[in-house]
Length: 208
Image 1: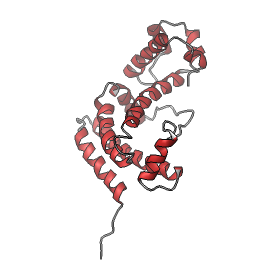
Image 2: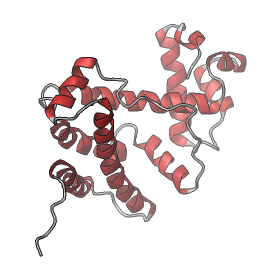
Image 3: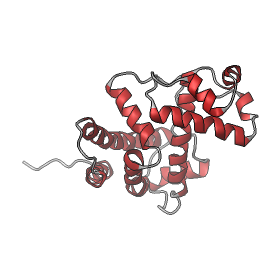
Image 4: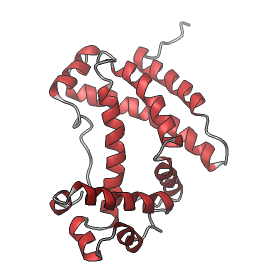
């Protein structure tokens, strides 16, 4: 996480630094990314960089958080329109995320991440996020009531299960990418919808 010194900077300078970070991490793997190139593109001294960020991992994870936060805020804006139904929201938002990850403006960042996962070079986050941190108490209550969950813990479990279904489809897309095949996000969305139906309706045993 950036220091308070970074957040005290004018927004224009913050944006310039993060634009330089985007360029560096979108065009190089994490191991190949260079702080020297980043600070040159941002027009800041090396000493200033270390006043803002602890190290290369710090700015990398903050960039990832910015991308993730934008996606989550997009989902949050659809909550009311989906009647606080987590499955309706998932069916609307998650296919859009597939398109964004594989073909959107941040696709290069995600492809670099896939490459790093494949080579086991991904740095580990230094902290974990509360999955409900971006939601208000009213939004949490609406989601919990819609699917008759008992408490916050059950809601966390449901959201984690939805995320796992999404990650499963991401993995299929990543496998196609690594094999040099085109990524058919429409097909992945169909698989995702089937997984969501299993979660929503449960598995029914066949009668003997």
